[in-house]
Length: 195
Ligand SMILES: [Zn+2]
Ligand SMILES: [Zn+2]
Image 1 (cartoon, rainbow, N blue to C red):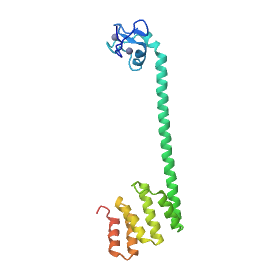
Image 2 (cartoon, rainbow, N blue to C red; image 1 turned 60 degrees about the vertical axis):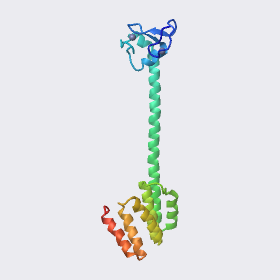
Image 3 (cartoon, helix red, strand yellow; image 1 turned 180 degrees about the horizontal axis):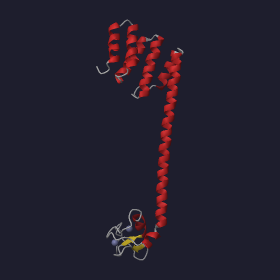
Image 4 (cartoon, rainbow, N blue to C red; image 1 turned 90 degrees about the vertical axis):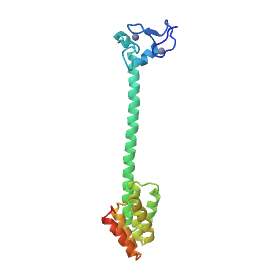
């Protein structure tokens, strides 16, 4: 029994087959339909297929291309939704941080600290979480809890050495506790973060 030159399975010459090219290479109708999506030449001898044959599979090709386009559009939509979500999250975060900064400004330190602890992710070293650490330190400093402030500022500068405001408030907190040497150590690191 002859076989299809594309899938190499047996082929029945009377049904669903084509002697497709000049050299009469046999293919299944379904195999040819797939092959024509990629090439218009016979896969075995590279002879071009006649246009009349290609035209018979035009509908199939159009349908496949439509499907491909639809899948692509769906993917693009999904990506743009994701991007929009990221932007929305960022704005939400900024607003949240802004509202907490306001709480600190109007001296509602406990409320600010509570909100900060709610959104703080201690496993993250994102800009957002570093800023939260800074605000946690600052709120505690202004509240007069210098020991707590030192904890937060220390954690912050351990993650990001180049955070001058972190060292500044770390120094101020030490100073409030009368630890002048340690305060100086922190101040020294504001101006020369490469040390
Ligand atoms: Zn086949
Ligand atoms: Zn051929």
